[in-house]
Length: 231
Image 1 (cartoon, rainbow, N blue to C red):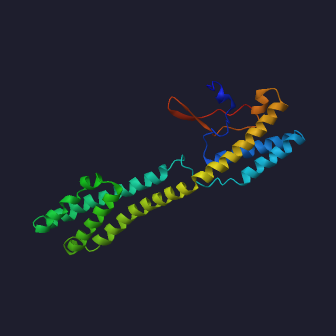
Image 2 (cartoon, rainbow, N blue to C red; image 1 turned 90 degrees about the vertical axis):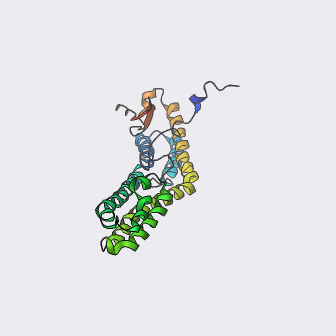
Image 3 (tube, rainbow, N blue to C red; image 1 turned 90 degrees about the horizontal axis):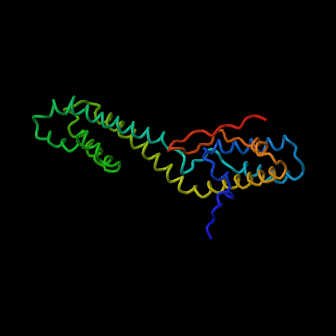
């Protein structure tokens, strides 16, 4: 049997697209609003369940769908800095000082464009090999070249390792995170159901919730949902 109207019965709080801190805040808003309204004994156990779910929710953890744009930008910046260092070193020191030596050809596989085309893992391998060349010819280039190169490369690998660690942590916590968000969603839906039994007006029920920080997709773009007008 086709569930033509099944979406009418889905839990809307499971579908809210919010970062964890905002998701917790909107649940706290509902809890405060209901308690301040003093709506009677029927709401007491529902509020207690919602409060427990809120207290068990850690808003500081990272979920799979949350943006890692900051880490990605930091990695690309560190990668670009390393490649620029390689290019500047080649132009300013390697080429003018080594071009008449047999070893000059050894630097050819390590040009900026060739390194830039590599995957992260291969880039790190090749970059370490380049530093070994710097070690070999440092006395003909400049005294702190190897130290400078290692610092630039370390800046890139440190960011990369941080991203890997965060991804691994996310993998191990993703199910737990889904469970604690679900606990709030179920508790809020029960509160909403009781509000609908108490009030016939949808606007009145809606006034107990704050979805101002939620986002919805429309024409491929995310935008905030409007905040309900004050009653």
